[in-house]
Image (cartoon, rainbow, N blue to C red; front, top):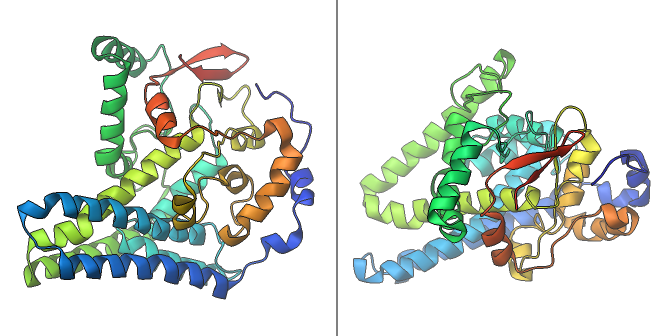
Length: 356
């Protein structure tokens, strides 16, 4: 358990060479080209060589899994723009981030704001944002425990994984599910609400207009070819990209020994250090621009560019020592295990942990 930390953010910052915080727009655009070109090439090859037939449904599914995995790299780069990692000019960050995120149906400015709160209140039990656990004595906590006792832990994990994959991200955007309980119902589209004050309304509406424009383009696509053509080439990978987002976020902040804090114990740095670097295959790590293996670093220095993250992480791990969290287990095994978690219980002094 982390109580009083023996260092500050400033102390950590001094251990990482300053050149690793420098931003190169040209280097960032290389990563953009990598992710976007791979998505387009895979889409083109699928369009050219996979017949649009039920007999080839397994092949289309394989394509969707692969291109959705690659497209998550686009999501990561748009997210980095939201953190200001592309350029020292915030306008340029927002232009590129808007294009990248809206193209994969992510409301850029809305997500930028809610994600900033996720970083500002990481692992806060009531004010956190996304994948905030329910408590053992809550109605939902009791319901989850009861359901798990009926179906068994393995079936419960399957239901959680399926729910995360299929509806996790859309339900968060539309209804604020898994958001902080202090805010109640929220929406990334209907504003103002407790997540989006009135002064954020204009940017929320701009994000929504961007989504409507992309949806219109998808409609034109389906009219020009067929709905099935658009569905297999775009929507199936889109669903896979959403699944990656929900799984990775869940993995990065959930573990038996990782606490959530209430207002009595939470501090920003303690929350940021409740982040876990997971063991992803190297090819996934490259496609996703190292977000899963350098996520502790990302939560402490969110504007540090991804192309410097691997090197900066070496200095971070050396300095943090036992305060650095990582998991060397196979990531699929880790996902199956943590998906059996139902709720957290109070361990004393404002510290809450998942039930075993």
